[in-house]
Image 1 (cartoon, rainbow over the protein chains, first blue to last red):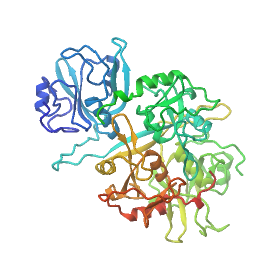
Image 2 (tube, rainbow over the protein chains, first blue to last red):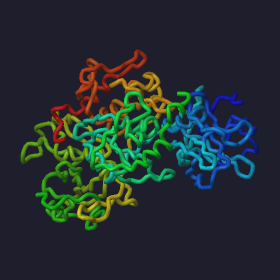
Image 3 (cartoon, rainbow over the protein chains, first blue to last red):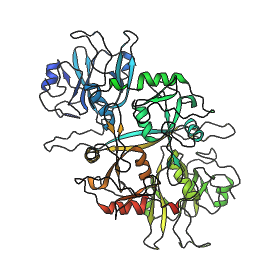
Image 4 (cartoon, one colour):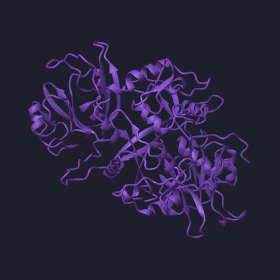
Length: 289
Length: 289
């Protein structure tokens, strides 16, 4: 079905608020090519558009949306029969997060599909639905400021794509300063200390992330002192710490090694449970790389 | 002279625009304690305030200021006789950059000292003045938005300090995507590849930084593919690459190792000259840690 080439960003023919009567019309306009899937992407590339339909009201706050990935359904029905895996469109949305490329967001409202602008993919996590017990891939989307339009680049020489910046937010609070002091800036996973000219450098990583939809606490029992490399791997679900043994899993070099801890650092092990369930991606669930 | 305890952030007794007749008045108010030095700091802590005087007009753009560190002068005169070193107040301003703690900025205007608000320290670099041939420590400061006041914390239990966020900006442009593809996400310094669940992760580092005051170019001959750890060390001047030999220097483990390069990646060696001069801090110049 997606025969036309994929197009990223704003489309001249699709202004904000444009309405489409059905999926075929979206396909024909090149606005969202697949006729069934809710995520339009090309192999190995970020997603270009997402259709939001049937989300819980809590998940759609207008400028902030939490959407669900694809897959895990019984063929021909909307009944979940398996966990969603980090493959196809679900993996593509991670590439949006990593690269800063936004998606066009369409909302299904009263039977028609309305274009609601470009959204950045800020976060990825996993959530097990209590209703059926299966895991979903979940993404936090954020509406971009439309006064600074994002322009796509035509591979044949159209307008140049506007520069993206991907921000890695490194918080500095009383708690994050405290954990770095406790470990003297030593990474609790790989034990590295990064020496910069005036002081060692480390980052504080929240085990259960702060803010919607995770609601982790900015407390000493929810932070680790990590080097930037392991902070990326931990936040993006490549590695986790098993609460039973406080050992590391998910990555070849660190596999089975103990977390570095000092007696003064009390950790709330429930935060590791949360990280294991919502953030960590087990190796068997890792799809097309 | 700095006998009163150091105070960070806005002071209730010093509103925006407040004027002080002389340095003694600044000292008495606790607004800037030293009577001669232009940087007020406590040992091992960030700076609390900076006095801007006699800067080149180009260096003061109002909300964006480039200021110069202290030291290197002949005693009792304003004549430079040595390079400035990364010690005392000069090292303290690096701690502001690393932690996000802002400084109070005072401008000397018409003989009086005016409080112009809180500024974040965004960048540190070194600059050799053509006029005398000596190196200066230089800092880019940025005015904070005064609609979201920054509150200091009284160690004896006053108001809590507002959370800071330190942003590590990771740019995503055609050039940065290209360099990561060229090296298949391998760090050109330490050779690590960080495997996240859908794709390896690397960052593109500009050798000569973009924007004021460096004016480096976003071009393939000015970027390296680095892991986040080495990106921090490179940007903060702990390590550099010698243009003559393309070997690494400044850090024990990597010392003398060759930069990883591929034939398709043409590098402009003048950018390494710039990094060596302006960003890298030679080990002999590294002061109180």
